[in-house]
Length: 440
Image (tube, rainbow, N blue to C red):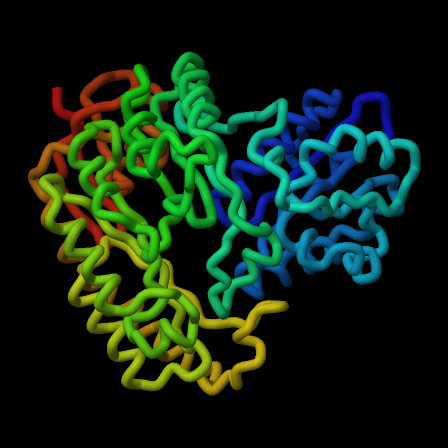
């Protein structure tokens, strides 16, 4: 590898992976590597992978195959994250030109693994026991956004849903001490960050190892850190979603009025097959708490269609759940079998064509719900955090506390800087975004 060491990193998957990549970037830069914009420019090419969906995993191996010719030019490849932890050393057999395979729990060991690669080792692994508490933050973290940042508060998952690979790739739940979380929030505020997002595979399953705070109390404490204007959290599990979380959102202005609460199915029978540990009725009870808040809290969710054994009647119950809840956004997917999961032993009884049909029906109905929901904002004045500018449309790109995109125009000759907060009057609505004009 050359005197000026360079790397290219591509991230697949969720916000947890995005933040993990920030840790990797910070560590690589501290080790003297410079980040470049393409595989062709890089000495070391890293893919931080996701294994939640089958296509996401396939995409990584397709990408590796597309660029394997670069190996002959001295490039080295690394597979990180969930696929690395899931497949382990089998990746070397499937892609022999890969030199490093590392799960997320091992990123603190990246410096020594990099040395091994630089010395010519071609099969370096970092597949540590994921029970360690040293996995939350690396010593050096690069933050890609100077105004909004992530804080991991819990890693892993103990739920073992029938379809989900996360417990096998991220390990069991282990929580970070509240003092550590708050210390990082204060450091971020001192560096100019005004929005933080608390992360976890099941973020509200967090339990303070020191026993000082509940999850709701942690939310409130982060929201009261001077300089922090917005606090988000994702992703919540319905089983551990408690009423005091809603009470905290009501009481602490910095807590954003948005809850992402994955339901996966509207049928209690399917939820039982999925091993989700709650019923439709229990889920709707939590929705009632949210709807009963003094503030208007936006709700979004995840849904899987075509799970093994899902009947037309089960699917219809999911559609009626959409009607009952009136979500502002739904992330919907067709069921796909994942390695090691209990659902693998269930007959995949829903044909692929029927899965696609159900998915489209769900998306079409949800789009109409969103269209009506977003129309309610017409004429309202909402606070938007500036994320950037769209020069082609002459618009500023912003985001509301409800996590809705709000593009707007301004009479000022110079566009507001990213990170600024502005009041914006909504003048037009769409199913997935809002349009407005800045209020003087």
